[in-house]
Length: 422
Ligand SMILES: Cc1cc2nc3c(=O)[nH]c(=O)nc-3n(C[C@H](O)[C@H](O)[C@H](O)COP(=O)(O)OP(=O)(O)OC[C@H]3O[C@@H](n4cnc5c(N)ncnc54)[C@H](O)[C@@H]3O)c2cc1C
Image 1 (cartoon, rainbow, N blue to C red):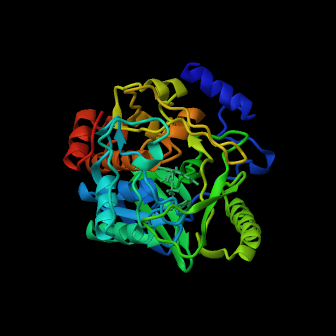
Image 2: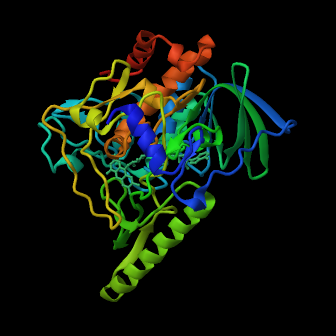
Image 3: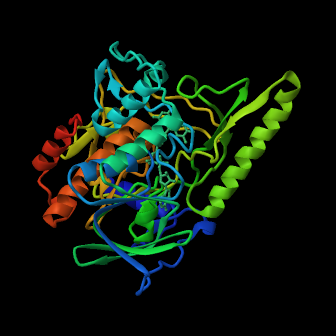
């Protein structure tokens, strides 16, 4: 299916009328009225780049923007950086290598290797050709506590203004950028920025601004990560996954439901394990979410683009993982990419269609669903984050939209910061 037909079919399938901001499937999730920022906020701040969401992609996006010389603020809803890696407990980023060769490096790889080094851990041997079924062994085990602490240290060293417990409430376009109303407990500020980078996982900011997003009627289950046994050894052991059907990070209500369902399922499991001496030795605070919204970008990475390893003319990074769509019951049958195939991510898939001064990175990258199931993995999210951060910094410094930054300049900046370009 070509892109236009795919989009038309998707919008029709989700019942969205032409021109609607969101393609939402269920009646319960009709888009709320878009709030506009208050006129007289108590605190006014100005930055070049505002990154919302300090998770897998957002941490790297902010680091890249700041290291490129842009004044950068990073607003994170939770209490630490790392998102699904740390708060979610999925602490084994992959895949940085494909077919025996490194295909993703840069700032994400720097943070991952620094974490492994300080933890006295070991990197997997990825020099051997990739073997179907062996991909989990090529992911890097990281100590999630250390990852969050080192990510924070690097951000502070880069001069990033870090704001935990805060989130954007409303935003509007202004001349040369955005006015974003940001709130948190006891905090209420208006931030003006030249470039906005949405790394919230579910493209929350893109939705807030009224740009189109897509989601499927059924979404993959999430997982609450836990350990039952004698002890949990971070960086050396993977946590167990308790599957949580329909786990959805979209609103505080859906998040609450996902956390309650996850903890109830862990309790049920524990009650069965306890008589045999099983103890709950680790439980993450939040259910990790696999899938919610994807943006409708200036281009859409189609399933065929992913599986054929299409090299987009504006490719800014690689991605590599089998097609990995989980069933509602948590089961998954990965579909491996053909020998030598390495998919790429174009800059236009990181830009919401029709937007100016807005970039998106992470699992909400503009893509068809099967392609997304491979693109959403952590190394690819980090690489997308770095690309979005670089594009945002250059666009902010030149007073232009990201699409007006010459691709050659973007590639030079990314290469300077260690990224591997397709
Ligand atoms: C159970 C599970 C298993 C997985 N297994 C693997 C695996 O084996 N290997 C692999 O590489 N990948 C795996 N993945 C996929 C991968 O972990 C995620 O797709 C990826 O980490 C998503 O990165 P992200 O930056 O898009 O989002 P996240 O890392 O989730 O970051 C989003 C951040 O934004 C913050 N945020 C959200 N809303 C707002 C807001 N409105 N304002 C401010 N901040 C906000 C969140 O608190 C969070 O910190 C798995 C995912 C799950 C859920």
